[in-house]
Image (tube, rainbow, N blue to C red):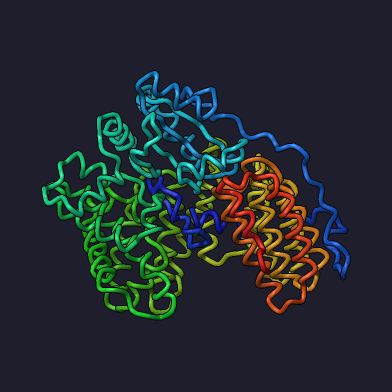
Length: 557
């Protein structure tokens, strides 16, 4: 489901147990959106060879969301001007990368951004709000290495990255990170790399800066997980002995990196590496120290499917880890100060771990009952618009892990009636209808989610989901797939559009269409799509990094 996949992608990206959450990478690379009625009776009818729909494409980019209406004085000019202003003021830049439909972004707005002490601290920075659908935003996404919403990056006025921040920490911790960035400090990535030659112990300040970097959103782990694992372990050894919280955070980052290294082998049924086995044991030991585990609760959302596969390789380890894991999650759930959204994410984490680590992969009835009660309670209460977005996303995850698709279908429909971005939920409705065997209804929802989405990058993302769904559920409808894909590609016809998230979605569309034409049955359709892309690519300067990504689409297919 788009929102389920996002939500899942986002527990690896979500962030909040207090962000203590877990929506699992695309919540499990889960994902890592969901029909009450079709978008018109005609779109629900069975089609033969006729086009799926006569899509209309906006000739101008849809308006992007306004800057969050908080007490933060977001810089009023463009990004280039912000850095010039930062240089003149002698301040670093606080760059916030977001999207209008993104639930974790709404939560940051409802919580962190509304806190007076945080607003006060940001006066020492040049705060820049960058909506992923704004003109040129995806280009900036490439420049700063940001893809996931939300991401916060702290940069010097010369554009050197100092650190990046994920959600989930107490406000005091955010302020600490900002304080550290205000000093004359070495960028986090340089500091980590320097550990290869540095035999001196780390200062508490350097240890803390490494510990609170947003490793979940840092491409160091994606690009070089083995090397990063070694560096993080070296950082743990170099931190002061009494830096227990910092060492625990670094250990969780190392576990994330090591499991990333082993991911493909684990999926293939191979045993985990010795390093990952050791780190699984370290995580279990951390969970046994409940106060310490709770102090780093936001980091537990970093643990991926690969981590759980590694833990399950040893049945004894799996039982021990699950028992301790559920103990910490229960402490969060039962704390009267826990917010509704945090409670839902903690419950979802319990369900996720139980399915992944228990011998039979089943959820006990008592746990399932507790989970449903929490969803009912959370959804029944009134919340601000921004806070409710997070509550709903947490509830979606709980129902997803419970396998309660009927209730989930109802919740998604209800939320579509009130949200400003109903298209976010339509992909989830499509996924449920597909599971039920209602492929025409599923395709209708995917079509509608694309048609109603707003913003260039968002429309291409939802449009890609639509075309991929057509290929999966109606592969013989070559005319429909061709028309839909041509229409979606039109979203890229403009300056600075094939970057960051958009470029990754284009790659996904490319692989889907290549697989569809593997036997060569749709050469004419592929040629038409490549021809349209030639027109788009021809408007991009050859020196632009986007040109290569554009030229590679369906090349030699």
